[in-house]
Amino acid sequence: TPLHEKRIAAIHRGTGPRDIDAKDIKWFSFDRFLQELAVDKGARLVRDRVDTISWQDGRPRIKTRRGLEQDYDLLAVAVGVNSPSLKLFQDAIPQYQAPQSTKTFICEYKLGPETLEKYLGDSMHVFLLNLPRLEFAAIIPKGEYATLCLLGEDIDKPLIKSFLESPLVRKCLPPEVPPEPPPCHCSPRINTYGAVQPFGDRVVFIGDSGVTRLFKDGIGAAYRTAKAAAETAVFAGISREDFRAHYWPKCREIDVDNKIGKAIFALTRIWQKRPHDLRGIVLMVAKEQADKKRAPHMSMVLWDLFTGSATYREILWRALHPGFLSRLVWNVIVGHVSLIRGKLP
Image 1 (cartoon, rainbow, N blue to C red):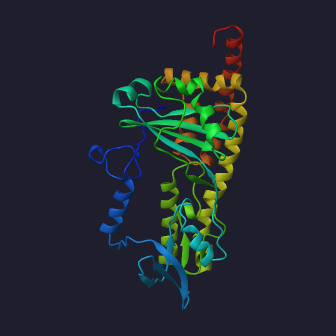
Image 2: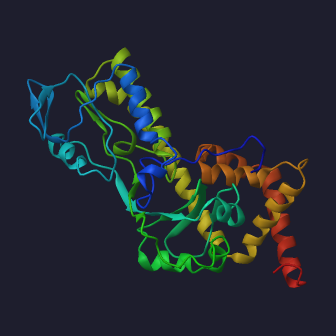
Image 3: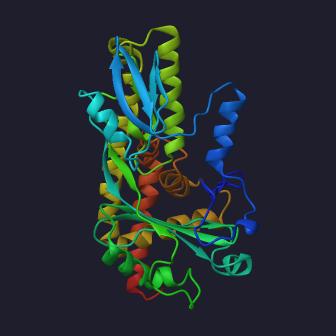
């Protein structure tokens, strides 16, 4: 990590990998943990699936699959883009258009603590490979498992195969791990563009169903949008115009930041196609990590870009710093010269 205090907590959202035995589970579901916090604060949990959404005297009415029916003053929608329930809200609220999304890939390799320590250590490994439609990928150690994430544009089997066959990726996995997805894998969708008008009279969409951060933590954006929605409902009102005036600015702020993120990743793709220039970035990071007195310009930019620790606006601002740009140009030149002289592989 660029600085000693920069750490990541790796968690499992639910019960964990598919192939794990119930008696071997050593963690608590993070989703369940958050749910129980809400219940402890007074939330009433109904374990049922929403079947229909309608309107009664100007108020939203929810009917569940088991027949429970109730009207509400305010409907806060917090479903993911992978949930079929999102279609129900699109039908009931015509002005709402769901976010655009793309397919990703996530899988879990059970390697064991010793193998994980040998090949991955306790660090997240990020890959910027020159593969079509791949923005970036990461392998993250979690207890006995290694989680592989591929993010980009409609990740499919040929792209997954090309990634797993890459020599750089093979170095981070034991030889006995085949270059194919393990039994525990999935292809969830993530947002690429936010929803159109994620609010209405007595209804507001938060998190993934509204606006979330591009390629980043969904829970962070969910918290920010939920806070903005709650403040609007309590201090302003629950009409469409109330949410437009007080809730929509927070969504727009995230949306603008995502546009900056798209521009940054477009530049990243250019670097991916220029491996000789990419050596300059690697060289710059290596120097920063070797000399703790040196300002970690590139280390911090890459850290925040791939962990979501800062907004894309902040990342871009730091990348435009004259000191950052001068060091980058210098290291690219040094990388090219060293390559010509045969001092770099």
